[in-house]
Length: 376
Image 1 (cartoon, rainbow, N blue to C red):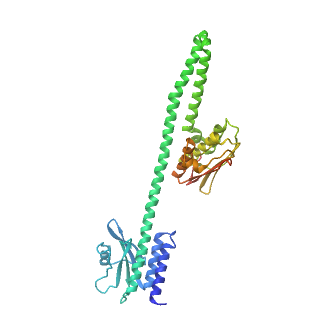
Image 2: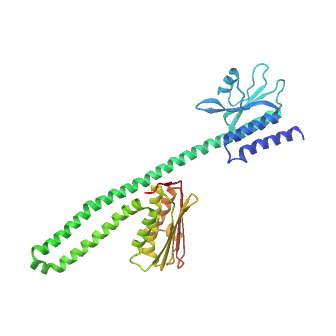
Image 3: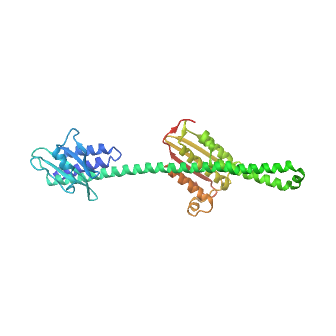
């Protein structure tokens, strides 16, 4: 095997260590790559000086017990001439080459040779190429770490947004209950007072008073339903399964749709924001069945296991064209479908909607589950 072929083989090994094993720890990959370089070049030691906060710091070195002398460390840690190859003065046989990403030097790759050993032009070229591969790996690791951190922050912000929405809903529910509902109850009391105060007049006005009473009762019931939607106390007090059973019964009580529930939960409660999201999606899906499906049956399945929670709601109703409804929304159905998808995406989940005319509808909402809380 000639020298050029050996260098190509060595570069391939280094490249594989930092790309073929991308799922492994970056520190282990870089350490293994430095070990390979020292072996292939017959060097005593190798190190990477990487830019951090405007300075170069020794991020990696091989072997682990090797320590730079103060003079060498000072030369390598200065960012001057970062884009150039640098060599020592005197009889110390080492070489430092720039590590570039997109033409920009971000660090130095350093190797220490045995006394009397100098790197050939081909070996220096190998070192430059290996340095660029290592730089790319380090920069990718940095970017992945930043993306992960941003995703974590985004997730926290979105969870807070959901919490704020729910808090606003609870506040509105309190106002409706404490202000509007109480005023309507007072109006019912006034109607009853008219009956008690003047039975003769009440008899004359009875048709009007009865219509008024019926209207007030209907409005009160509707407000109570809205309050329950805004603040699902059953969810807060008894959990997801009980809340889904209640909302299925309430939404479909006025239709002839048979409800089939199969709810398999976890031994503990899910995180509040996750329970709320699943409940709201189920609530919207069942409302759509009641309003649009004209279904004989609806099946509600909730399964939480293996780090994932999946809610499926299927009906045998009229069905609809999903693509057309989402791309050309008319009315509130599309708004509800889009809202379900957005709510799931905010928590790293997904909602898949499958339907066609005359074939019913299947909605599948899947969420990652980080863990469970204590019961109660």
